[in-house]
Image (tube, rainbow, N blue to C red; front, top):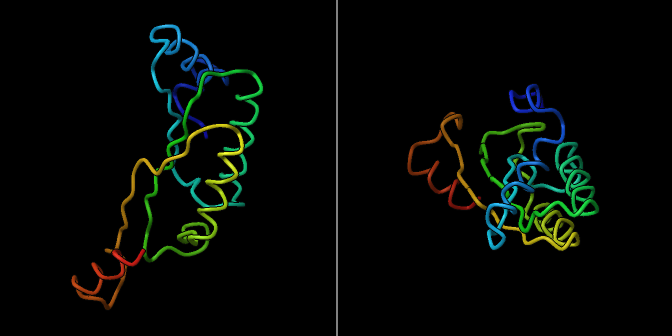
Length: 128
């Protein structure tokens, strides 16, 4: 995705940031945190895996991957919540790179669930 770091520093800015971090603290647990990559087989999760696979091959000092699970209970299409099977499959796939994988953030938005009261929306969020 286009961002100011990419525009100003170029495509290697993530790799450079991890190398500098390792140089500054050789014992730091370095985590690459990303959103919307929880499910297996999406365009973004596949691109994220490819990036990590290449980074591991180039010995970029990434120890762990953090998945930011920002779910929308009313999500449709590419905003649909991935299934537990899909999340497990992607966590396993990322783990095959030798990286630890965690869900670093998790929230479920329910405001767009029309026709449901607050208690019902809370129950839906809890099931997710």
